[in-house]
Amino acid sequence: MTNSSGTISDGDTRSDGRGEEAGREAGGRASGPQSAPGEAHEAGPRNAFLSRLEDSWQRSGSLVCVGLDPEIERFPAQVAEQASPIFQFNKAIIDATADLACAYKPQFAHYAAYEAEDQLQRTIEYIHSAYPGIPVILDSKRGDVGNTAERYAIEAFERYGADAVTVNPYLGGDSLEPFLEYEDRGVIVLCRTSNAGARDLQDLVVDSGRRLYHAVAELAARRWNSRGNVMLVVGATYPAELAEVRAIVGDMPLLVPGVGAQGGDVAQAVRSGQTSAGTGLVISSSRGILYASGGDDFASAARTAALALRDRINAHRLSP
View (cartoon, helix red, strand yellow):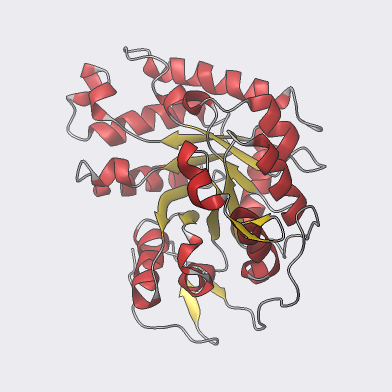
């Protein structure tokens, strides 16, 4: 892996961490008045990550994203006792579900807590080598400014080689820019999250009934997505809000956590968030798939759970 340093000017290129380079486009962000909720804006031009995601939707016939959130305490004993238990557990899950998944989403804290960043890197490398058509989303929810944000972008895209990363927009557009500069990668912005406390801030009224999450969606659609590499996180636990965000951002893809253990309704999430093509969603489930069984049959049980989720989703898609 190649690490780099320094601020990148408009004429420079970024390495993608796997030996490819993507040039940066000229041109600024869109400007103009903000829209009211319900006024849709089309997403920008597709980048390499979003093209790969679209291909993955088509190949798998699935909108299921398998979250790789390891908890060694829940592993079967035969796996927990191995030298690299997280990697071995992940590998078994990936091999069992690869034809059913449109993406994988490792959650960074579940590796850092075990000092297992090396096993996170091995997991991402394994997916890229064994199943190169499936994109990997690093769920790290980074949010900082200046050179610190730049280092977080290097961490996600160059150290770990992730295809996309989740980010927190609370510090504003300049905190996202170091991630957006990687034009061949995806930048997935928290908008309306699935947790119960999301209402504390995200539902705050900013003007004329427009809420904070509306403002985030509008900024994503009108300004931040000038390179065509932005997605939003919108939880399945709030289907009405999911529909509002879809109306604001047009066909922009949405990462949708909250089904399964968090109780989000699959049918409502699909009906509220899908595009006219029956896609546009990356519906993530972690615990409901990973820990469908605590026994030696954990991988086959994970496959059964992923297949059931895929079929429940497809039952409500316009064009499955």
